[in-house]
Length: 347
Image 1: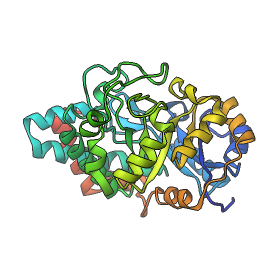
Image 2 (image 1 turned 30 degrees about the vertical axis):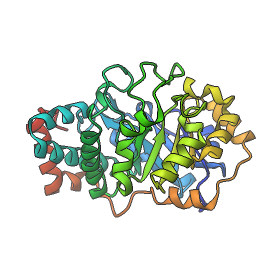
Image 3 (image 1 turned 135 degrees about the vertical axis):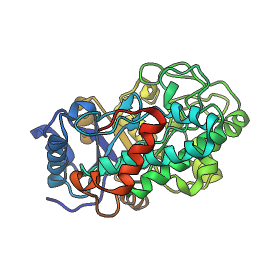
């Protein structure tokens, strides 16, 4: 076991247990985080064994997952609550505002409490993109079209995460919902003016303020603001997010293996561009060869400010074991509330 400062790279692992190559990558001094996917999950016992393996290699590592609810939920069986898509909470808002905020808090609490029993620090949630009805990749992952409703429901969800000792990550700054192209496979371009974006899509980031602990920018180009996608743009990250919005949390790049990142060059050039623009940590997923290239060729060593920010994202407080969690009154109440609101599948 090693005790080090986290590096600026978050990468994934191949399967249900660590391979020798996984261990080598995690042990690299540039590595600071591991992101898990559905392929890394068979059941809770196996998942807990995997996170223990990761901690044995690096005890300073940040373990994360995309676990939003709806169609983006990596762990769905062996007791994990099937969480609703965020659009369903937004639709509930239209019928009962107070119930919707209670449900959002319950979702955040269940999400975080269950992940923490498996020693996972962070879920990349909430989605703050607005639902314009045109983006298939965002779609029902968005709470609502109205930025005020998005901000208030996200704040409630963040409160639930915090109750279980978990930080949060708003995405995809300044907004991915207006474009039809999927940045996993294309390079989306949003032709709107800076004023339009700031007064609509980016407003939840301004309103949430200190309630946001991390942000992930979009692989979207906004040519009337900057020629670079937001995740590689000093204008968006340093001038607007850090400067105008006074955000002092962690900025993660989105996955550098996505097509939307290709405009920045190969994975090494893209990583340097993202860090230079203002990101604290870069993600490289589903491409072990590119992860190897990045760790081999990247020259940037993370600065102390970024290291401090990332350390603050580690889960806080003692997590319950699974059996003890199932008996907690707040857990049972959150489960009951979701079942009543959505008839969600019980764990």
